[in-house]
Length: 258
Image (cartoon, rainbow, N blue to C red; front, side):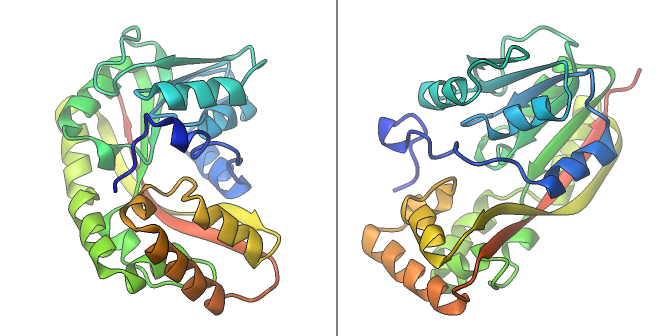
């Protein structure tokens, strides 16, 4: 039941929210995007494409392999003159060589069959001195227990088979660093990031978001009945007051020499 990113039924599943201040602050500590050119590979519905523009980037290119995601991102960023959205393969984008100061990919690399090919493409797109920022979860990130803040942890406590799926598809720190190094990136480092995903006014708003499997590809591996049971379990753990949902990520950062 894995997600079909091309299906019209999944329209806007990766749109409709905004990147939160903690994510914005983390990006600014890596490189001030003001006046720079950014490419957001695997842009989905354009949430982070728009966020980079909001941080002052001179231009942001969002690229995704799904025509549905491209349509969502195009609609979400309409009227933003410094944003362009196009369809393309993450490993063969068709974009010009050395055109970007920042090459960014969030929640993408765990979907790719060839991490090395992607890192080589990212290196090709980066200008000399440009930065590549990869944001994804390692197995250690998704293994954290569920809590009122880390709601994702409940997914795996309730359904251990989802934990097995995650363990099989999430990259290790060494694998990503090795692929980036082999592609030519230098000054490599990785660091954890707690990112606030969304603020919900109450539990019912969270339940609606979970019910739609919004922005959570792993939930497409559950039946409707299983998803309903998971939502009931999560709501039983949470206060009725507003809910702030956060996720733990890893950032991998490298520079193209020059």
